[in-house]
Image (cartoon, rainbow, N blue to C red):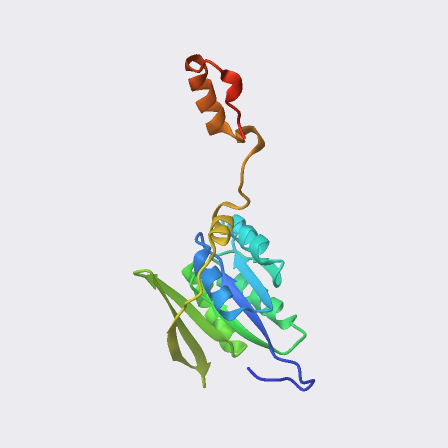
Length: 197
């Protein structure tokens, strides 16, 4: 579904991401497609990964987390269909099946077929990210094409999606300098001349 709706507004993109333990396979396609809305589908185990992704993306787009039982096809399908049925605007739905469990991928592909959505899978190897794009046509899954993703993450984004917030901790501030000063003090005739900046 692409183009303009009846009101003349540009069609919005909704990205459904199956969240596994690695955040990059979801983050790169999000950067590539630049959706208006992201639905992070994950388990209790991968909730920390979903939360970190949400925190990085929430200032740029609408992000929601959809908890599912990662091994229950019926649960995954019902929750995902309910979430997608609640979209009140014309949207191009793109389902990334790279992350999550195989069961999650299977359920998401079935829902994508029902909603006539594009399905994507990210293959990363040899410092290259290749995006496979599929869509159902008359109940048959077709490969629409592949493309190399040029988008990259900033160091800040990479750290935040892996470890969350980061930076100097108050108690560790100037720790290196303090240790150097402590080691040099007995050998310096004028210790007042050494300051920690």
